[in-house]
Length: 192
Image (cartoon, rainbow, N blue to C red; front, side, top):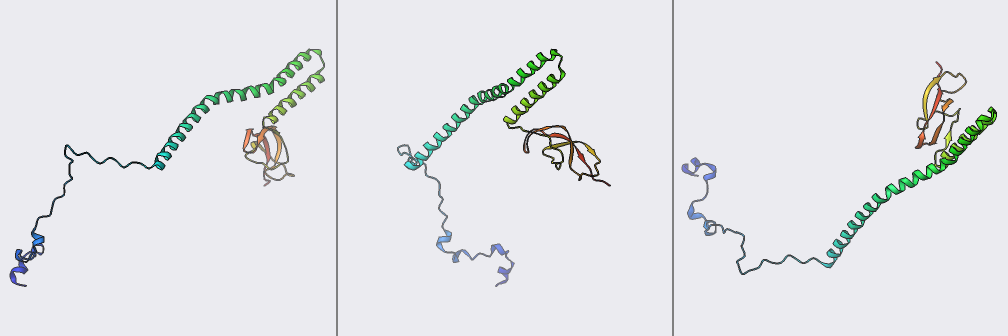
């Protein structure tokens, strides 16, 4: 390299113009989008296939069916709730009737008959709850289960293993995972 070439900056080391090819000297063609003239029409969008049109039609129909289902459900829900409320209330009507009979016989003066009548009404109410899916449970001597029991007291019982239900203070109704109310119980604790 000559002294002159070494002093030029690196980016300026291009070959002299005489060495450049004619293709390199020619300006690059500019590509601009072609604008249609007044007499020309733009190409029509591609026509959809019949399968795509059929799928879109089925999709629209499915959306309409779903919307109709939502509206029907919104109309029927209050009716269904009312029907269930009426069913439960009708199940308790005999209990109320028997309580009224027990109160009517309370004036007779026989306390044993009143107590047995109230027990019968209670048993009838428990049976109504059982038929609605909430059986009564009040077992003692079973291990404490947090889904079925609510501890209200802890007692010292030397003959009973720790964590055992020793007394039911208020019975529970329902089954594990589907309860109306847990049983209030007293549980034995570990002896120290």
